[in-house]
Amino acid sequence: MEEHFDVLVVGGGINGAGIARDLAGRGWKVILAEASDFAAHTSSSSTKLIHGGLRYLEYFEFSLVRKALQEREVLLKSAPHIIWPLRFVMPHDKAMRPAWMVRIGLFLYDHLAHREVLPGSTSVNLRSSKLGAPLKAQYKRGFVYSDGWVDDARLVLLNALDARDKGAEMLTRSPVTSVQRHAQGWTAQIATPEGPRQVHARALVNAAGPWAESFLRAVAQPVQGEALATKHLRLVKGSHIIVKRCFEHDHAYIFQNPDKRIIFAIPYEGEYTLIGTTDVELAPAALEGFAKASIDESEIAYLCSQASRYFTKPVLPADVVWTYAGVRPLLDDASGDPSAVTRDYLLETNTLGAPLLSVWGGKITTFRKLAEDAADLVGAMLGDRRSAWTEKAMLPGGDLREWIGAPVRPDSDFERLVAAVNQRYPYLPPKLARRLARAYGSRIDRVLGTAARISDLGMAVAPGLYAIELRYLQREEWACSADDVLWRRSKLGLHYSEAERAAVAAWFQQNPL
Picture (cartoon, rainbow, N blue to C red):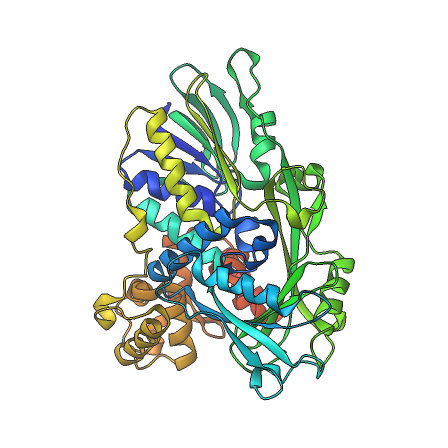
């Protein structure tokens, strides 16, 4: 039996989830199909920054930087539990860029868009500041500026949750095996875990990320042999390493490299430092069968070498405790250097038959604006323009007013939430209370329910992870496996031993949904 929808969205990364949320909030009947898990690929493998992209100023991407800086403010206010301000230290290296050039860049960065939440840039004497303590003595001065940090995988989840709350049907582990274009709509075959489904949608949104081009070439069946794929993607792998904490303070570093690239060294999960990223071009064949990208030894060596140019204590490959890699689907703009390829997005409409919208490129910071623009275009193609709504809207868990009263600023608001959680659930260990507040924000009571003591949380499957939370993640957040929980719904896998990770896997085997 064929089911009918207004829009089928293909892809459950940040762009697909954001578009589904926006469309559903405008009243469209939406179904989203993701072949793997939400944020299983690119959208959980970013450098986890909400930023304007300071280095893009060198490529004169002023429009992109302004758009990203505007969105930075919007997102910081929409989800203060998973997005928060972060200060960055740039040690000045005379051999890289002159100080006057850095100052001009930071002035532009401070003033290209209106700022309410984040402080502006300043200079710092690294020899007399704690910010210089981990650095080699040759770095005597530096610059400090603001950006934001995000739990990228949970950002995707929050968009998916909001889309579902607004009526969208959100499918994971459900690849679209074929779509046939007709004059009045699209017929799609979806292989769900429960069996095949056939759906009819008036419009199709191709938000398949790194697979957006191959989806149009290999899965979509056009009318009368027309070519649906008119653009080319450049697939650029970005890899990261995690090492034990390299410094004690709460700022991050941005390091300039001799190859004119930059890397970040960012406080991560309390005990670690995240270092990345690389830019390695991939052939499309590398992603056949939804293969997951992985880091190469040469990338590990590169990141260790560049970080060691700055840190007094060298970063060695043997220090790496975890790695991850993602593939950025960048729109091919004929740039020779992968680092120079634009991070902006292009939304391409095709109305030669049933409406088709393809998402080319993009970055996590601008996902909300991309989704808003996409929903505007879909409405126009369907002949029914509906009003945008997400700019002032909170993401699930982000509205803290019932817990803390009127908001003041995102970072202090979150600390007030933690205090309120500790007061309402005094039996929670402080570390667990903070983690749950970070993950779920004002929805923490949906996880804990009526639990009045620690024993009400059920079995401790692993340290700080109880059955009550796993059941919530199964029931509400599409978690089907240990990997879903340990590496995307959280980063607990980084803190657990192999035996503890195995215990979580065993729980899922013993407690299927």
